Image (tube, rainbow, N blue to C red):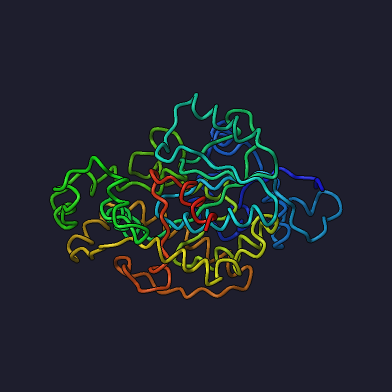
Length: 377
């Protein structure tokens, strides 16, 4: 049965009185052309969602209020950030797409997040012509569909503590996970032995490229976009990433609170995520998650971690901003957050169930092959 599908958009207008003053000021002084370049106009789906949550100042003045039923977005993009739980989510999406009948669109390209203008146009065309309702997923920096005349989809994503993400990727590239003793050799066959066994403290303290900027400036470009300045650590990319989160993302969750992320996705996008939490908690799914924990992790020295924190200060400002918005959203739905007072530096390596279910989602991984192997069992 084909439903009437409304054009989806963004999340930021849900909290008009709770956004930071700096964000409001940025919006206020932004030239109309620049604003159009970023988001292509007001998002219908998020205006509806804002009304649903009781914060509408727009829809209330335009005819009778709609029924309190969330609209069904037909275009969703999950431009997943590497080593932030996307292996778990992609596996869940494969199950959910069969269960609910939506079109899960994936990509054979796993190691290209930055695109030329022509590549952007081609990818946007391919995504936009997919059978709806679709959910497209790939490791790729934010794409502005409206810039090329397309309908802007709903974006979703998940991020995690930046240092923990970096360390997970560092050791996974070298030593893989519990799925197989040699999978790291397949992933990085050209890595020299001295590089594979490079001590993490040496890498950080001696300023190796892998442990320095711009390589450490990793999360923000997924939200800033394809502009060259989005890859330069600094305020410009940070502020643009925040603006895009507010203008174009329905939800940006925190991996450390994954069950709440799944709960909100089920609430916002039930036609895609209905029953996701019960599937996630299923013992069989948990067993699969245990195969993907990165092996041979070691904890850097306090001095090395402090240096990483300084080098990733923009990443942390973005992480804490997203976390704050996520907790605001949770409170809207009556979910409790255990918020602690900020510390001088982030808290690393807190034992949690997620440590034993960390997914594989580095860009070079052949996502579909592994998932197909699972479904053949």
